[in-house]
Amino acid sequence: MSDQYFASKPSSEPRERTIPVVLAGREVLVTTASGVFSPSRLDMGTSVLLSTAPPPPHEGALLDLGCGWGPIALSLALQAPQASVYAVDVNERALGLTRQNSAAVGATNVSAALPGDVPVEVQFEGIWSNPPIHVGKDALHEILTTWIPRLVPGGSAWLVVQKHLGSDSLLRWLRETFEPEYSVERATSKKTFRIIQVTRRVGAD
Image (tube, rainbow, N blue to C red; front, side, top):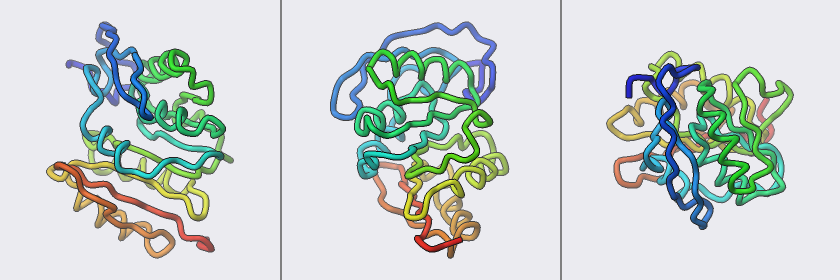
């Protein structure tokens, strides 16, 4: 596609399509479009993350960081209907699709928002992300140092990264940046992906 999925306002025609996906154990129909991440299917990394990370907490605030058309946010919302799910992206087309898809599947607890529109006082019980590796290392590090410190004590961030796109180097950087206030570990590997867990220690400042 001509647009980068992390552009704020994709210039291409949307070219919307409806696709079936399985989220939270049920098949749903969602709308995707060009100019957003993985418009033709549920991408493999997100699928691995959703199938390997533990279920979300039932209550509190949950974050889908880099939501695209919304598969992680929808899955969290369907599993935890009493929680407040924030779906964050810089891509306004992606946010519109997430709102549309949330309404379509009855996920009334999803708030799709630009990063700067999430109230600063909100802290998260959990963060889930298939992070935008292609924005570049410096931009990616800025994203993670902005959002991971908003975890509540005991809360975890779950990140999926493909091995050949630098999962091991990201793991090292996360340890250098966040330990010892946070524990950082490779939770599991599946196919060519790594799942990284970053947990804020209870009692850490």
